[in-house]
Amino acid sequence: MHPRLTLAITIMEALAIFAYAFSGLLEARKRRLDAVGAFLVALVTAFGGGTVRDVLLSRRPFYWVEHQDYVLFIFAMAIFAPLFLRVTSRLFDQRAMLVTDAVGLGLFSVSGTSIALDAQMPAFTATMMGVVTGVFGGVLRDVLCNEIPLILRDSRPYAVCAFAGCWMYIGLERLEVDTIYNVLISTAFILIARLITFKFDMRLPH
Amino acid sequence: MHPRLTLAITIMEALAIFAYAFSGLLEARKRRLDAVGAFLVALVTAFGGGTVRDVLLSRRPFYWVEHQDYVLFIFAMAIFAPLFLRVTSRLFDQRAMLVTDAVGLGLFSVSGTSIALDAQMPAFTATMMGVVTGVFGGVLRDVLCNEIPLILRDSRPYAVCAFAGCWMYIGLERLEVDTIYNVLISTAFILIARLITFKFDMRLPH
Amino acid sequence: MHPRLTLAITIMEALAIFAYAFSGLLEARKRRLDAVGAFLVALVTAFGGGTVRDVLLSRRPFYWVEHQDYVLFIFAMAIFAPLFLRVTSRLFDQRAMLVTDAVGLGLFSVSGTSIALDAQMPAFTATMMGVVTGVFGGVLRDVLCNEIPLILRDSRPYAVCAFAGCWMYIGLERLEVDTIYNVLISTAFILIARLITFKFDMRLPH
Image (cartoon, rainbow over all chains, first blue to last red):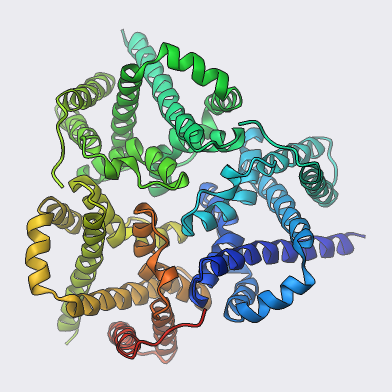
């Protein structure tokens, strides 16, 4: 059974990187950046969160050093951005993008937590590293594009969903749930929490 | 005598973190960020300077990993921000905030210098690491909030006071003044320099 | 013959740091920052790219820790900025600045690639580290000054020239060209590519 689950995680990972890179491309388009700008913003959006986490944890090699194929894919996405955005906007409507992005948020946050626990971080720090992994790509994207990060502006729960899911991962880890199931369950939890709070237009106080 | 001095430093440290986090909350309020945004901005303001210094020095663990109680305190500050800001604005008028912030600038800069010296940095680099520790939290706060960092815009001496105090610390260190006295004296120096230059509205050329 | 080539590289390095710091000073002037602000922006522009690369590669000591004389030079540049900018604007017209900056882009990118290869990075990552070294100082400068980084906005090839030159360096390295010649050739390639694309006003698609 495990190989199939591993495959599921690999697919989710690819979806997540795609969704994050895509949001970078969209932002770059809005700003009328050229192909190089689009590539850099997409790259930073997709790998920024994990890279900041790894710098904080003194962990190497970076994901994007080990998975150059993803970098090349984003490179191609950026070069063929006009074509690519047209095709994608037909295949992925806004709802599909919301789901894909939430899969990314879930998987990145949960795997960030898992990696921080492996690096002997205490539980609370591990959940914060998880949230950093999930949201910092978007923060860097917005800083580069000279905007207040969306996550700071938008009062719809985003980081909070990730935070809750990271604690769920740690809880299930303590209950000795098998890691691969745990990743799937906690990611699903974040995905669902995000979709429900979005659907019912729940807002954080401010 | 030492335990009392150590207590003094612990109190100053708590004041400093409080003052920096508070300035983050204020900025977040101005931008109408939600509770999560306020927490992130406050956190980055309070611990950003020390974290950047530790990344530059390859030093771990981070202060906020070892002192999770402070993180939780900032978490509570952010959640109860409306209440908290009302109470605080009654207890701390602008003058009190100026003093508290200057204590933070002094303590962070001096301790940053001390840590850089322990990491075998040459004197000049150590003073720069001290200034980074003192001012980078505010820089990151302003970058996140999409403003030119206050420290770059405001011509009233801020980094310069910190810089002078860091050199004082190194000077007294060479004179073999006991570290704990040295921290107190140099921090007091930065505090006083900041208050005097502010009071007489001294300005840097530009 | 080697000592003369080493001298050539040292001169190019000084030119490069000067050009980058200078662009930071100009930006600071435009924003009417004070001397401290100008110093910080110039410093970040000159050493930001190399510092980010070294953080990514876990490499120490930083260049600016080992070469404090350059830091002091930038310090003096910032303090005497009004005088300095007047003299320089007479000696260096815009064309001279373009060339000087392109020398910086070339040398920083090529040396960044070389350092990344030494750190056992795969070729593609090494070229990306090279580009980061060449362009990130300017990115940080613009983020600090609250602008969308020029490199993202300007469709005239900049990062692309650096990227091509980094691949040339790796190619010549595989052909076992002596490192010092290779640095000179690849830097010259980037310089010329930058000048040609600029001269003919070539643009990247967007």
